Length: 382
Image 1: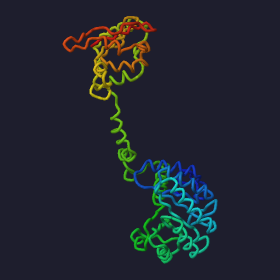
Image 2: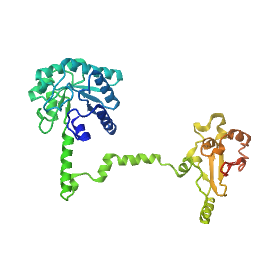
Image 3: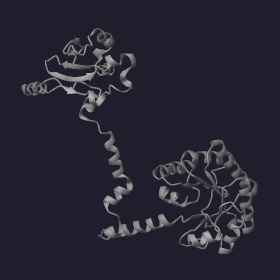
Image 4: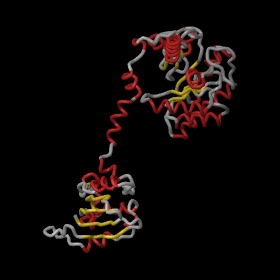
């Protein structure tokens, strides 16, 4: 919560982050990484019904775990002044509501129950609440701002079998800063170092801005190369995946939904260039768009639909617009591109056309008409 409030709002962690903002930020984080993410849900943003909604929202956002604390609203940041907690009964009910929400969602999200009562009330109260949270169904217990190694050892002895979480507030919190190995020896299973990343980032950005303001640029050793930055952000993976969806020239021209690739001639030069274009060879799009051996064979009629046809479209000015070989079945989809084909019974015409392999009737005309724009549309057996 501290780092999200700082990075997203530029404000202190004093309860200003809303449920919606945390859900939105959490979804962005969980979608960007492949490791489990535990989200800080503060006090659940209200009563037990709010807690249930919060847990379900965190589940949908992709969180693997959720931390719920027992502070009143507005909450205060751990290790700072002004913390107050709700009653024992309300705190326990919040955890029970969270467990119910998880069960209703069919989720396995880890519920981390946190109490701030060590600084707000006493160590004994914090230990009592930790035991009660475990009995209510919490998966992990967390007492914030324990004041000594001895207190940490006492806490880890509570509710054996339920994992404990430690919060190492770098830079000067109330809890002694210990190494992961030392904390493991005491009995902790989960450790948070909440300020390490944002702390070093803040210092690095400040140093860079001071340097730029002073007419200098940060030395190359202080930042990764542009190639390293691109690789970290996924540019190279994006480029590789993008290659899978590059269309061939034939697919691009026939997938655009517009077969009229020419315009009215405005000069003799235009007419000449378009006349030259009409001499281009026939395009064969069969290999790219149709597989005669696939399910597209259409069962009993597969033989007819797999026959190769030649589609030729000539503009009213005599300029050839399309001359391509296509599978017969492809004409069905061409009715949206060439309205003049709509209503034409291609199947009936194919039935009446000879299918003798020794006498393929190449060049036989199946269709020959003008559409509403004056273009001549011809379909031949190829």
